[in-house]
Length: 315
Image (cartoon, rainbow, N blue to C red; front, side, top):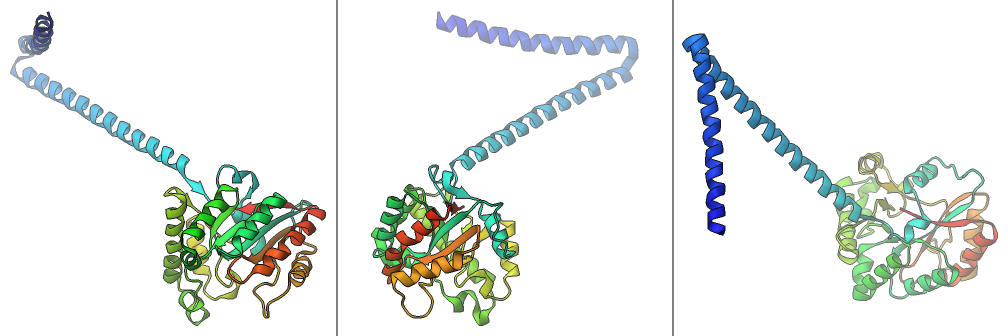
């Protein structure tokens, strides 16, 4: 029964094709009767032209289908992208570009609303970072971690595990270069843009290895601060073209200034530099040797809570 059905279908197809050919022949014959040989030539040209139009339409439709499929896939890929924070962390996230503009213009007002960004540079470390994360959890606040590639390598598997913990707990992940080498990044105190890009890309690739290929961050912090070097307009152009933000600070606890300080001194310095500012970006470090920073952290957080600040992250 199946063979008969297949034969019937094939016969119908041949009949349909034959009918189309017969129609064309009849059409040409009719035209020949009324218009002669010239008319036949015109008819053939018309038929060829119509076939070509049909082919072009089909080609265009196929191109449009391929383009639509490409766009659909691109949109699907975009949905997978993770920019700086996970879904939970988005609740605490603030537009880093807006903060960058505020810092560069020395405008620390915020329409009467107080916000503070706790930022930690040079991590992760296997000694200080775990304690910082524990305190942040206890205080139920989020922070932004500016990570340095060399210290990630230094800490090995434990360091990479800490990055995953930072990310999974809703903190923001940002890039603070690979080498933190002033001579490499700013030879003669002037920016070497290509060296700078290469150095940051190395850490970006490391973060992808740890957090997955869809992770990226548009937030960076220049080693030594953006304000410290010459020729930074080239970096500004690059960042603008790539929708990225360079974040400095307008307050600090002083844990990287001069002699080593006690927890109490670090608390006092943080409070002193934050006073009178509705928007505070507080610089601290969670690298090796910064145990006093971890000890000072609960009091620093308490100060901002008591003074009505909301804790946000940068992404």
